[in-house]
Length: 303
Image (cartoon, rainbow, N blue to C red; front, side, top):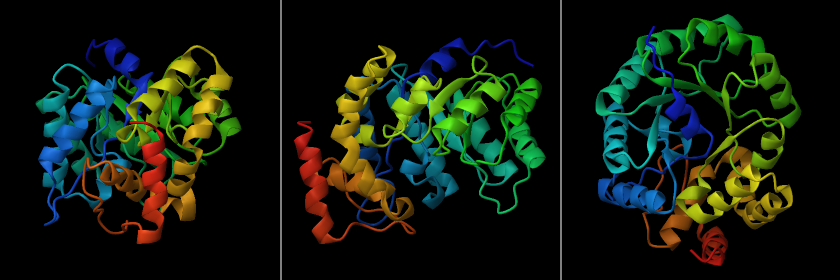
Protein backbone atom coordinates (compact mmCIF):
# COMPACT_ATOMS: atom_id res chain seq x y z
CA UNK A 1 0.00 0.00 0.00
CA UNK A 2 1.18 3.49 -0.83
CA UNK A 3 2.53 5.83 1.82
CA UNK A 4 0.26 8.64 0.56
CA UNK A 5 -1.20 10.53 3.52
CA UNK A 6 -4.13 12.06 1.61
CA UNK A 7 -4.03 15.25 3.71
CA UNK A 8 -4.70 17.48 0.71
CA UNK A 9 -7.54 15.27 -0.45
CA UNK A 10 -9.14 15.18 2.98
CA UNK A 11 -9.01 18.97 3.22
CA UNK A 12 -10.64 19.28 -0.20
CA UNK A 13 -13.60 17.18 0.94
CA UNK A 14 -14.23 19.41 3.97
CA UNK A 15 -15.68 22.13 1.76
CA UNK A 16 -18.33 22.83 -0.86
CA UNK A 17 -18.02 19.79 -3.13
CA UNK A 18 -19.44 21.05 -6.41
CA UNK A 19 -21.23 18.64 -8.76
CA UNK A 20 -21.05 20.40 -12.15
CA UNK A 21 -23.76 19.87 -14.74
CA UNK A 22 -22.86 18.42 -18.13
CA UNK A 23 -24.15 20.83 -20.80
CA UNK A 24 -25.34 19.39 -24.12
CA UNK A 25 -25.38 20.90 -27.60
CA UNK A 26 -28.47 21.04 -29.80
CA UNK A 27 -27.40 17.75 -31.41
CA UNK A 28 -27.03 16.08 -27.99
CA UNK A 29 -23.26 15.95 -27.65
CA UNK A 30 -21.32 17.24 -24.66
CA UNK A 31 -20.96 21.02 -25.04
CA UNK A 32 -17.32 21.29 -24.02
CA UNK A 33 -17.18 25.07 -24.51
CA UNK A 34 -20.11 25.61 -22.15
CA UNK A 35 -18.68 23.07 -19.70
CA UNK A 36 -15.34 24.88 -19.61
CA UNK A 37 -17.08 28.22 -19.07
CA UNK A 38 -19.18 26.82 -16.21
CA UNK A 39 -16.12 25.27 -14.58
CA UNK A 40 -14.21 28.55 -14.81
CA UNK A 41 -17.18 30.35 -13.28
CA UNK A 42 -17.13 27.92 -10.34
CA UNK A 43 -13.37 28.37 -9.89
CA UNK A 44 -13.68 32.16 -10.09
CA UNK A 45 -16.48 31.90 -7.50
CA UNK A 46 -14.12 30.35 -4.96
CA UNK A 47 -15.04 26.69 -5.45
CA UNK A 48 -12.04 24.42 -4.92
CA UNK A 49 -13.50 20.90 -5.18
CA UNK A 50 -15.14 19.64 -8.39
CA UNK A 51 -16.91 16.32 -9.01
CA UNK A 52 -17.19 15.49 -12.71
CA UNK A 53 -19.56 12.61 -13.45
CA UNK A 54 -21.75 13.11 -10.40
CA UNK A 55 -25.50 12.68 -10.45
CA UNK A 56 -26.05 16.38 -11.21
CA UNK A 57 -23.68 15.78 -14.13
CA UNK A 58 -26.07 13.06 -15.43
CA UNK A 59 -23.52 10.29 -14.82
CA UNK A 60 -25.91 7.50 -15.77
CA UNK A 61 -26.92 9.18 -19.04
CA UNK A 62 -23.34 9.62 -20.30
CA UNK A 63 -21.46 7.14 -22.46
CA UNK A 64 -18.07 5.86 -21.25
CA UNK A 65 -16.37 8.11 -23.82
CA UNK A 66 -18.33 11.12 -22.59
CA UNK A 67 -17.46 10.38 -18.98
CA UNK A 68 -13.77 10.31 -19.90
CA UNK A 69 -14.15 13.58 -21.83
CA UNK A 70 -15.87 15.30 -18.89
CA UNK A 71 -13.13 14.07 -16.55
CA UNK A 72 -10.36 15.34 -18.82
CA UNK A 73 -11.96 18.75 -19.36
CA UNK A 74 -12.51 19.18 -15.62
CA UNK A 75 -8.92 18.28 -14.74
CA UNK A 76 -7.65 20.67 -17.43
CA UNK A 77 -9.76 23.55 -16.17
CA UNK A 78 -8.98 22.85 -12.50
CA UNK A 79 -5.27 23.13 -13.36
CA UNK A 80 -4.16 23.24 -9.76
CA UNK A 81 -6.88 25.68 -8.70
CA UNK A 82 -9.17 22.92 -7.47
CA UNK A 83 -9.16 19.28 -6.41
CA UNK A 84 -11.00 16.89 -8.71
CA UNK A 85 -13.13 14.04 -7.33
CA UNK A 86 -14.16 11.88 -10.30
CA UNK A 87 -17.41 9.93 -10.17
CA UNK A 88 -17.05 6.25 -11.10
CA UNK A 89 -19.43 3.32 -10.96
CA UNK A 90 -21.39 0.63 -12.84
CA UNK A 91 -19.76 -2.84 -12.89
CA UNK A 92 -16.41 -3.32 -11.14
CA UNK A 93 -14.26 -3.46 -14.30
CA UNK A 94 -15.88 -0.28 -15.64
CA UNK A 95 -15.43 1.49 -12.32
CA UNK A 96 -11.79 0.39 -12.08
CA UNK A 97 -11.12 1.55 -15.66
CA UNK A 98 -12.69 4.94 -14.88
CA UNK A 99 -10.72 5.22 -11.65
CA UNK A 100 -7.43 4.43 -13.37
CA UNK A 101 -8.23 6.92 -16.13
CA UNK A 102 -8.93 9.57 -13.49
CA UNK A 103 -5.51 9.00 -11.95
CA UNK A 104 -3.78 8.96 -15.33
CA UNK A 105 -5.12 12.39 -16.29
CA UNK A 106 -4.26 13.97 -12.94
CA UNK A 107 -7.25 13.62 -10.61
CA UNK A 108 -6.36 12.59 -7.06
CA UNK A 109 -9.72 11.29 -5.81
CA UNK A 110 -12.65 9.22 -6.97
CA UNK A 111 -16.24 9.09 -5.73
CA UNK A 112 -17.80 5.63 -6.07
CA UNK A 113 -21.50 5.88 -6.91
CA UNK A 114 -23.91 3.87 -4.82
CA UNK A 115 -24.22 0.46 -6.57
CA UNK A 116 -27.48 0.34 -8.53
CA UNK A 117 -27.60 -3.45 -8.56
CA UNK A 118 -31.00 -4.51 -7.16
CA UNK A 119 -29.43 -7.01 -4.75
CA UNK A 120 -26.78 -5.38 -2.55
CA UNK A 121 -25.57 -7.38 0.44
CA UNK A 122 -23.52 -5.73 3.18
CA UNK A 123 -20.51 -7.91 2.47
CA UNK A 124 -20.97 -7.37 -1.25
CA UNK A 125 -20.95 -3.61 -0.72
CA UNK A 126 -17.57 -3.96 1.00
CA UNK A 127 -16.25 -6.24 -1.76
CA UNK A 128 -17.38 -3.85 -4.51
CA UNK A 129 -15.65 -0.84 -3.00
CA UNK A 130 -12.58 -2.83 -1.99
CA UNK A 131 -12.04 -4.04 -5.57
CA UNK A 132 -12.12 -0.45 -6.82
CA UNK A 133 -10.07 1.08 -4.00
CA UNK A 134 -7.34 -1.58 -4.22
CA UNK A 135 -6.96 -0.89 -7.95
CA UNK A 136 -6.01 2.76 -7.29
CA UNK A 137 -4.12 2.80 -3.97
CA UNK A 138 -2.69 6.28 -4.60
CA UNK A 139 -6.11 7.89 -5.07
CA UNK A 140 -8.41 8.98 -2.28
CA UNK A 141 -11.67 7.03 -2.42
CA UNK A 142 -15.06 8.38 -1.35
CA UNK A 143 -18.01 5.96 -1.33
CA UNK A 144 -21.34 7.62 -2.09
CA UNK A 145 -23.69 6.05 0.44
CA UNK A 146 -27.44 6.05 -0.16
CA UNK A 147 -28.13 2.71 1.52
CA UNK A 148 -29.86 3.12 4.87
CA UNK A 149 -29.36 -0.57 5.69
CA UNK A 150 -25.56 -0.47 5.76
CA UNK A 151 -24.10 -0.26 9.30
CA UNK A 152 -21.10 1.91 10.12
CA UNK A 153 -19.05 -1.14 11.06
CA UNK A 154 -18.99 -2.17 7.40
CA UNK A 155 -17.36 1.10 6.40
CA UNK A 156 -14.75 0.60 9.11
CA UNK A 157 -14.14 -2.90 7.71
CA UNK A 158 -13.60 -1.45 4.22
CA UNK A 159 -11.16 1.18 5.48
CA UNK A 160 -9.21 -1.42 7.47
CA UNK A 161 -8.50 -3.13 4.15
CA UNK A 162 -8.14 0.08 2.10
CA UNK A 163 -6.53 3.05 3.86
CA UNK A 164 -7.25 5.20 0.79
CA UNK A 165 -10.95 5.23 1.71
CA UNK A 166 -10.78 8.66 3.28
CA UNK A 167 -14.25 10.15 3.17
CA UNK A 168 -17.92 9.37 2.78
CA UNK A 169 -20.57 11.18 0.78
CA UNK A 170 -23.49 10.34 3.05
CA UNK A 171 -26.86 10.71 1.34
CA UNK A 172 -29.37 8.94 3.55
CA UNK A 173 -32.02 11.57 4.46
CA UNK A 174 -31.92 10.93 8.20
CA UNK A 175 -29.73 13.11 10.41
CA UNK A 176 -30.04 10.81 13.43
CA UNK A 177 -29.02 7.79 11.36
CA UNK A 178 -26.07 9.77 10.00
CA UNK A 179 -24.92 10.70 13.50
CA UNK A 180 -25.01 7.05 14.58
CA UNK A 181 -23.42 5.72 11.38
CA UNK A 182 -20.53 8.19 11.54
CA UNK A 183 -19.78 7.29 15.13
CA UNK A 184 -20.01 3.56 14.48
CA UNK A 185 -17.66 3.87 11.50
CA UNK A 186 -15.26 6.31 13.16
CA UNK A 187 -16.17 9.98 13.32
CA UNK A 188 -12.58 11.22 13.12
CA UNK A 189 -11.39 8.51 10.77
CA UNK A 190 -13.20 9.85 7.70
CA UNK A 191 -14.17 13.20 6.23
CA UNK A 192 -17.96 13.28 6.31
CA UNK A 193 -19.59 15.02 3.36
CA UNK A 194 -23.31 15.80 3.58
CA UNK A 195 -24.36 14.22 0.30
CA UNK A 196 -27.85 15.73 0.18
CA UNK A 197 -26.54 19.25 -0.38
CA UNK A 198 -27.51 22.53 1.28
CA UNK A 199 -30.95 21.50 2.62
CA UNK A 200 -29.34 18.87 4.88
CA UNK A 201 -25.99 20.57 5.51
CA UNK A 202 -26.87 22.35 8.80
CA UNK A 203 -28.29 19.23 10.47
CA UNK A 204 -25.47 17.02 9.20
CA UNK A 205 -22.78 19.50 10.22
CA UNK A 206 -24.24 19.54 13.73
CA UNK A 207 -23.66 15.77 13.79
CA UNK A 208 -20.11 15.78 12.42
CA UNK A 209 -20.05 16.57 8.69
CA UNK A 210 -17.44 19.08 7.52
CA UNK A 211 -18.32 19.36 3.82
CA UNK A 212 -21.41 19.21 1.63
CA UNK A 213 -22.12 18.47 -2.01
CA UNK A 214 -23.94 21.00 -4.15
CA UNK A 215 -25.69 21.22 -7.50
CA UNK A 216 -27.09 24.65 -6.71
CA UNK A 217 -23.48 25.92 -6.70
CA UNK A 218 -23.55 25.74 -10.51
CA UNK A 219 -26.02 28.62 -10.41
CA UNK A 220 -24.91 30.63 -7.38
CA UNK A 221 -21.42 29.83 -6.03
CA UNK A 222 -21.60 32.69 -3.53
CA UNK A 223 -24.74 31.26 -1.92
CA UNK A 224 -23.06 27.91 -1.28
CA UNK A 225 -19.91 29.64 0.00
CA UNK A 226 -22.04 31.68 2.40
CA UNK A 227 -23.50 28.52 3.85
CA UNK A 228 -20.20 26.71 4.39
CA UNK A 229 -18.60 29.76 5.94
CA UNK A 230 -21.53 30.09 8.35
CA UNK A 231 -21.33 26.40 9.25
CA UNK A 232 -17.57 26.53 9.78
CA UNK A 233 -18.09 29.42 12.16
CA UNK A 234 -20.75 27.45 14.02
CA UNK A 235 -23.26 30.18 13.16
CA UNK A 236 -26.33 28.05 12.58
CA UNK A 237 -28.78 30.99 12.48
CA UNK A 238 -26.76 32.46 9.60
CA UNK A 239 -26.65 29.07 7.87
CA UNK A 240 -30.40 28.77 8.20
CA UNK A 241 -30.82 32.19 6.59
CA UNK A 242 -29.10 30.71 3.55
CA UNK A 243 -31.29 27.62 3.93
CA UNK A 244 -34.38 29.81 3.72
CA UNK A 245 -32.96 31.55 0.66
CA UNK A 246 -32.50 28.30 -1.25
CA UNK A 247 -35.46 26.37 0.15
CA UNK A 248 -37.89 26.76 -2.75
CA UNK A 249 -35.24 25.99 -5.38
CA UNK A 250 -34.29 22.80 -3.58
CA UNK A 251 -37.94 21.83 -3.04
CA UNK A 252 -38.48 22.04 -6.79
CA UNK A 253 -35.44 19.80 -7.32
CA UNK A 254 -36.61 17.27 -4.72
CA UNK A 255 -40.27 17.06 -5.79
CA UNK A 256 -41.66 13.81 -7.20
CA UNK A 257 -38.70 11.71 -6.11
CA UNK A 258 -36.17 14.25 -7.41
CA UNK A 259 -37.56 13.94 -10.94
CA UNK A 260 -36.35 17.45 -11.83
CA UNK A 261 -33.15 17.49 -9.76
CA UNK A 262 -30.86 18.23 -12.70
CA UNK A 263 -33.54 19.88 -14.82
CA UNK A 264 -34.11 22.72 -12.35
CA UNK A 265 -30.38 23.48 -12.16
CA UNK A 266 -30.03 23.55 -15.94
CA UNK A 267 -33.17 25.66 -16.27
CA UNK A 268 -31.71 28.23 -13.87
CA UNK A 269 -28.44 28.24 -15.83
CA UNK A 270 -30.37 28.61 -19.10
CA UNK A 271 -32.29 31.58 -17.67
CA UNK A 272 -28.92 33.21 -16.99
CA UNK A 273 -27.63 32.42 -20.47
CA UNK A 274 -24.94 30.07 -19.14
CA UNK A 275 -25.89 26.76 -20.77
CA UNK A 276 -28.70 24.99 -22.58
CA UNK A 277 -31.63 23.51 -20.67
CA UNK A 278 -31.45 20.13 -22.39
CA UNK A 279 -31.25 17.03 -20.20
CA UNK A 280 -31.23 13.38 -21.23
CA UNK A 281 -33.86 10.75 -20.41
CA UNK A 282 -34.92 9.66 -17.88
CA UNK A 283 -34.78 13.36 -16.91
CA UNK A 284 -36.99 15.76 -18.87
CA UNK A 285 -36.99 19.56 -19.41
CA UNK A 286 -39.37 21.63 -17.32
CA UNK A 287 -42.73 22.59 -18.80
CA UNK A 288 -43.07 26.22 -19.84
CA UNK A 289 -45.20 27.20 -16.82
CA UNK A 290 -42.52 26.09 -14.37
CA UNK A 291 -39.61 27.83 -16.05
CA UNK A 292 -40.53 31.32 -14.94
CA UNK A 293 -40.43 30.40 -11.25
CA UNK A 294 -36.95 28.93 -11.56
CA UNK A 295 -35.73 31.97 -13.48
CA UNK A 296 -37.17 34.29 -10.84
CA UNK A 297 -35.41 32.42 -8.05
CA UNK A 298 -32.07 32.56 -9.87
CA UNK A 299 -32.51 36.25 -10.66
CA UNK A 300 -33.32 36.90 -6.99
CA UNK A 301 -29.92 35.63 -5.92
CA UNK A 302 -28.34 38.71 -7.56
CA UNK A 303 -25.80 36.62 -9.45
